[in-house]
Amino acid sequence: MTGHMTDDTICAPSTPPVYSSIAIIRISGPEAIRAAASLYSGPREPEARHASYGTLTEDGALIDDVIMIVYPAPRSYTGEDMTEIFCHGNPIIVQKIIEALGRRGVRLAEPGEFTKRAFLNGKIDLTGAEAINHIITARSEWEIETSLRQMHGSLRDMIRSIRNSVTELKADIEAAIDFADEEIEFISPEAAVRSAEKILMTIEDLLARCRTGERLSHGIDVTITGRPNVGKSSIMNLLLNQERAIVSSVPGTTRDIIREQIQIGGVQINLNDTAGIDTPGDELERIGIDLSHRKIETSSFIILVLDAADGINEADRNLLEKTKLKKRIILANKSDIATPGQKNSILMDGGESPVLFSAVTGEGLKELKDTLSKRIREEFVDVKHSFIADMRIVSLLERSITDIRNAIRCLAAGEPVEITAFELQALIDTLSEITGEITPDDVLDSIFSRFCIGK
Image (cartoon, rainbow, N blue to C red):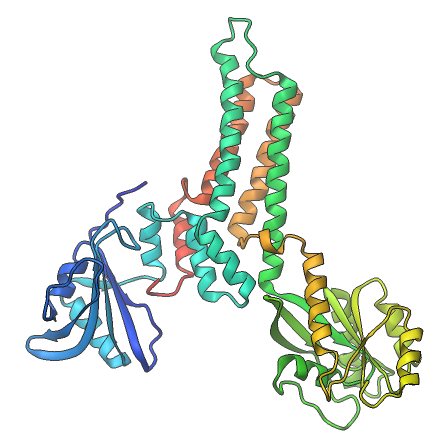
């Protein structure tokens, strides 16, 4: 798949169109070095992969002072001749350079076209290409780390090792066809089934890790709940470190669900602050309480807030009962104004010991974050070894499971060897689609069209 050369040259700004100190323009294709050189003059000729400082001019008119780096093929991001121009970050200058390149036959790149060329030239596989897009859009440290590992081939290597096992099994089974006349058995039917079942388990494990990654990349839903005026919004503000929820001295002012995103332990958390749950006073409040109950149902984790100074009442008992099967952390807020006796009674009354907390002094904040981080890592055992996979990869892995199950069924039923080999070939093709060794063009278009221009 290497050496897929294109005959047109593309360019695009790789930095956003804002006023900044520096902007970068990338050019790739057969004219990439020549088109840029025709505008450039400097004390020395640009040398491959070295930064050269000089000036861009067109027809005697000065465009900008720039730094230029040329990357002759194949040692470039796309595998083609490439040039990068670092100019001053004024959108007007960027536009002028792109227009001047346009007059030299260089067209504006489509979204993701640089990475698509890198893929077509065998620089990266499809799982690596998709990971590059995730690095740009990642919203948590975990997502960046995972995407970087994937860009370096973590998912590709996993898929290739599964595919090698399938290829070996298919070769062993097919050997029986070639030597049908002789009494040689290369692999017993039982050993073939065991081998295929091991492959099935590996694919199922990989799919589970991709699903974990999928959940983590959307963020973990954590809902703060409690009766009105226990300080839920103040706790949320403390976690967010900035005023996002409206806090008022009137009890029960949060009427709807406020959702904010934070990072705890490197993982993105969607924090939901709900309306206080008590007997509703008006229609609006009733809707808010209904929403709160629904959010409790769907959240991965609950932070249940009690009032340390006020003790546990009927509304608290109902909430403790309602959330007892959920993964929860109980917070006893207002511990700064509670007496030692009140604190003890909360600790006794709740069954499981709450985190003593004060939204005013910040007491218990570190403990809350540490507990939450620990509980998330227990829930998602494979945080470190999960993958970021979109629908394309997940559906291909699901198809792989169907393929290997078909093969196991054929083997167990003693079907002709050719039929089993056919099913195993289908699996090899499906796995090759994940890494992009076999890929329909429309799939490529849909993947790269989601990238930003200039990548």
